[in-house]
Image 1 (cartoon, rainbow, N blue to C red):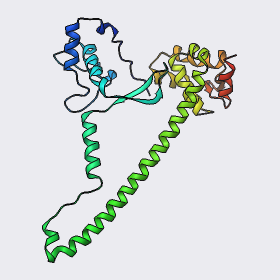
Image 2: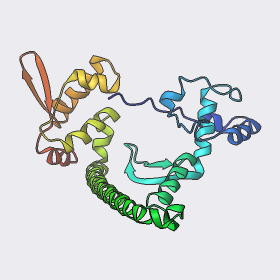
Image 3: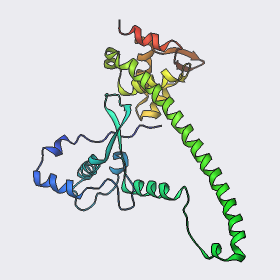
Image 4: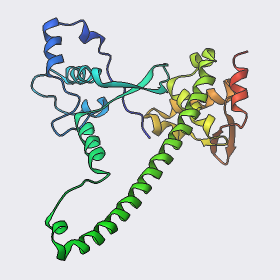
Amino acid sequence: MKIPVSPPDLTALLTGNADRLLQMTRTGTPVDPKGHYFHWDKLRHLAPPDVYSNNEEWWFSVKMACQSTYRPLPLYSIQGKPFQFASSDKVIRELHWLDRYAAGNIQSSDAITNAQTRNTYLIRSLIEEAINSSQLEVIHQAVNELHSYLDEKIQGVTETERLLVNNPRLKRKLNFRQLALLRHALKHPRFSYIVLEHQRSHGISYDVARKDLVEMADKLKLLLNTKKGKQYYFVAPTDLEQRIAQTKQ
């Protein structure tokens, strides 16, 4: 999977004309009129609204509009900054609807007061209640399983980050592509990497991709370099944690 293009540094815009900055701050919204949020990797290809001179100004206004709704996550980037997310009005409305109607509601109708239809209505209501209860139980179970899965993933990320945070010397030696591969390798022992896959994942040249993997194998000893036929494989060793610890020495 190709990594999205990193957003531009907005520091230059912050030092620009104060009136222009104020205008961009007032006109910005986190999402478009249809409720869609665009990451910079997609927004940079779209035509900006007429109020903006370029896509950088549009992106700046979007980020400013998101500031008040940001919430941190227990996950960190390779730069050590916590990830965060913002909830749009559309998401909040849909969550409110789900909270209000998922458990059903109480209404009165002629079917209840009419003696001829009361029994039929009650039987139908009991059947629907049984179905709804079963569906809610399935949803509840699925949510619990999702929480357990996320807890396991977060714990795995936390352990990986601990190894890297405790080894700043290694982080200075590796670029962001190598760090991403190292995080994957820690969670997938014996996984084999090849140059072409690394090249496609990051949208880089073959020579740069090969240099990344060869350096991790031959220089830092973090991967095992093997060859089958004409194909070179770079394998995640089962003792990778010990190898990382040794780089501190």
